Structure formats: C-alpha cells, structure tokens
Length: 84
Image (cartoon, rainbow, N blue to C red; front, side, top):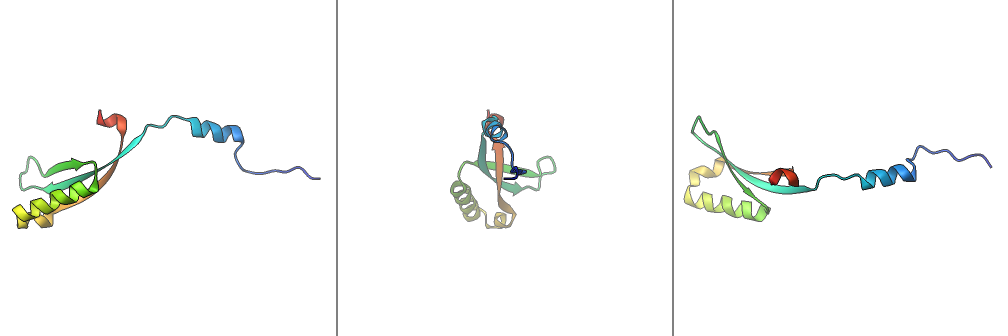
C-alpha cells in the first residue's frame, strides 16, 4: 500500500489554532448624523442592538423630518477590550 500524503494540517496544528486566544468581538451599531458644524462634521450614537438604533432613527425623523436624509446606521465589530 502506498503512503498517504495530504496537504491537510496536522491535528496538533489544528488544536494549536483552536486554542490560540483571540480577543472576543462585540458587534455594535452606530447612528451617524451629518452636521453643519465645521468642528464636528459627524455626531454618533452607539447601540448594542440594531432595533434600538432603528428606533432612535425613527424618533429623530419624527422630531426633525429634514434630518432623515442624513441619518444612517453602521455596523461595527469591535474588540471587547477596546470598550473598557
């Protein structure tokens, strides 16, 4: 029987990679607001859940309909250690 060769990583390499400590990631949603102020061109509100960000946008649009076109929700993946 011929020897079996494969390019697959060894079990040890797979285990090492699995055990490597990677910092946990957190997903946050920010609502970015364009501003007319030259000193602060953007304002940002940050939320843990997308639903909260959407509710914030809805409330802002009710209060100021002209603001609706300048609001958008951005999804960010942040290392948990950066939040401390």
